[in-house]
Length: 279
Image 1 (cartoon, rainbow, N blue to C red):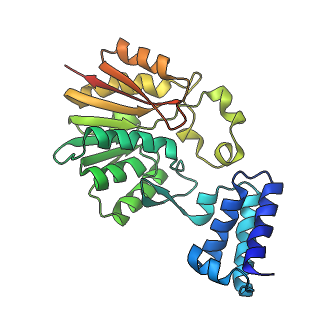
Image 2: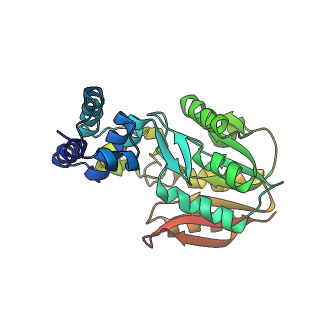
Image 3: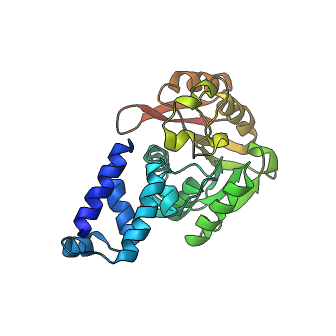
């Protein structure tokens, strides 16, 4: 079989397993197994590949066929144009969260001198991206030591000087004030966890997804506890579920935040809420 035929065969295998974007995933796995970029693949598409490439490719396909996320198989993913390490210990960065990062960068094209806290940092994709692209002075916190280990590797990969803290939300932070607090907290209602697609339900860490009975547990805590860590005029930027805007807005209003705005994603669904705290 030629390289093209192996990729087509892999796509058929993944389609049969119900894998979304089977053709893309099949090529991505071929690219990783063979070391071919798209240009080299096009040149060699009608040639037979080395048997060792095929062997590795089949092993990778077998994992993806079991719905193991593509990013876990590759060990990396892209976020905001940057490459990030991922593992089963962290939530895989997704395009939805880029809406949050892009809005922060739009509001603060040069964050030099501004202190930013990334709460529930996970892989560190927000912390690192905003450090690299926005030049903020960044701190990041997470409850999971394993997640923080991945985040620290990503910060090191990109040459970022980020202060990391391990604890339950603000618990481990020293007494200090921030100009911005960003967060992609767990926000899936507990009763909906079993309805998630297998890649998320079975392989993303549950603690990064489960937002309590109504999905709003962490927003309540972030809104109440976060006030003590914001300067007067400081702002929050949080990712939300597509149907949570009204509820999260109500939580923030009750806690005294103002200038609230809900920002949609590319599909027009509510995705980010931002607001201001004034002492």
